[in-house]
Image (cartoon, rainbow, N blue to C red; front, side, top):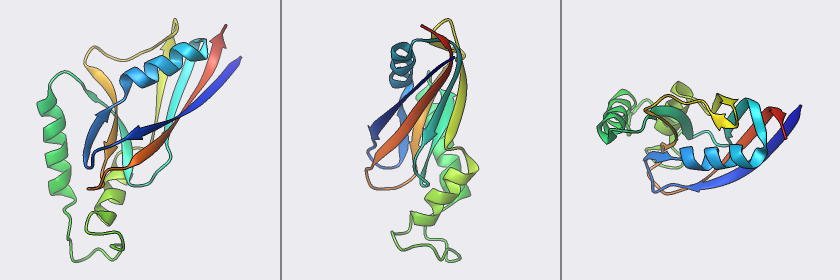
Length: 141
């Protein structure tokens, strides 16, 4: 059984989806794992990871629009606002999505559908540098 892990820092430009599919594919290739499981874990509480459509950008825009309506900034009921009006909404959006993903690896490649990509979703207004741990476990060379 082969175990491999690598940490990446992904810069964001503020709220929005940042595709990191190629980065994860490259990590899988370096790992030498041929058949197993790739787990990605975001080491933050105000951003998330998603598998989402990567062909039509309107799908991502609609997702961002929906979540902005679902969890608006400046809600007078929020008390966790020390870092600004996007503070609590960013934590709620992360709680409603996910901070880790598990994706199968078969014949040395991630198994994703035709239109699927891996995204880091920044929920804060300001740019950040987000840490993502990629961990692979399986048969390999």
